[in-house]
Length: 370
Image (cartoon, rainbow, N blue to C red; front, side, top):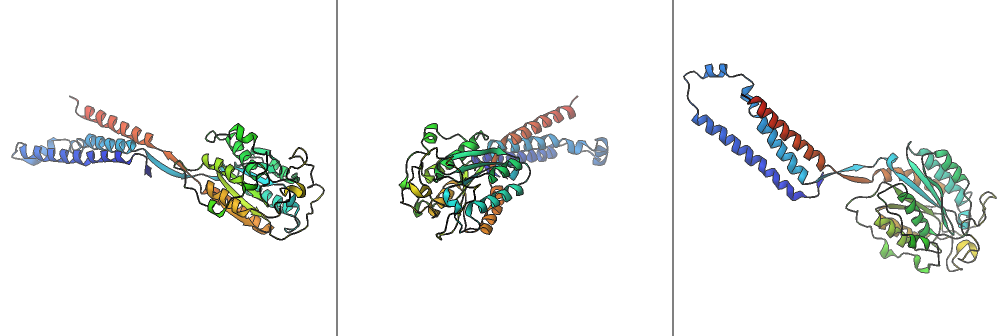
């Protein structure tokens, strides 16, 4: 238990002071009492319960003061957020590089299988949303508890050109904001420009990989999972998008998928989609979003992904094959469950103090009625 106003606990000192005064008064009464020739007769004449009930009201009153003093200190307790109270936004890269065959049979198929297994393994009641991103980010499935809808959507993913990691992160924030009143949506002007323009300076540096302090209010239970095999090719820089998430106390977990080995791009007919995300010719140049030839689209930008996770209190994971990716997804529920939420419970102490005070007064009037 923690306290928002710990100085108020000084009020607890009143309790021992009043108790000491009460005990001193009892001793004084004994010294001034009239001496009887037979104490035994007096004890027999007084009901047994009167020997202790006269102390009950003062005991309750002192307990009331203690409860009110603790309540004034604004106590808080920290609770683990159960997985079924968490909304998870799976943000999946469907750029052309996901056709790479360094992960058998290709990266996209491996990612689809791992994501479906993750969905199946969630406890009942967990809401999951899916965002797919290539040259644009698009919400495929709003947060839902229907695992069938989620699995069908994952099976239907198709590739397109480009990689907008930053824009996809902003889309995930807005998705959480639509279901969690504690999360503010992204500024419309920022969101409108998220997909626009090249961002050669969008990569983070090692200096950016610094864990952010935990917000005083803790993190919201909803989280974003970003899986990508490349680097941002256009739009808002991923780290700038992560800062928007951090400002809203939203954790971003990032996964860098694939190897560093150059390989052929082979997708099935079902996975080769029209450019449904880019609305026209790719502005990033040839080669499935290589940024006009300035970047190798098969290279995952680990430094930026690490910086995104660090800035938001999340975790970065690396997965070079299907087994590692399944292990990463298996770790996510425990990481999410370990999120904490603080609740102020001062009202309970104030209520208890008031009830104790009223009870003390009521018993005192009842037992001392004439």
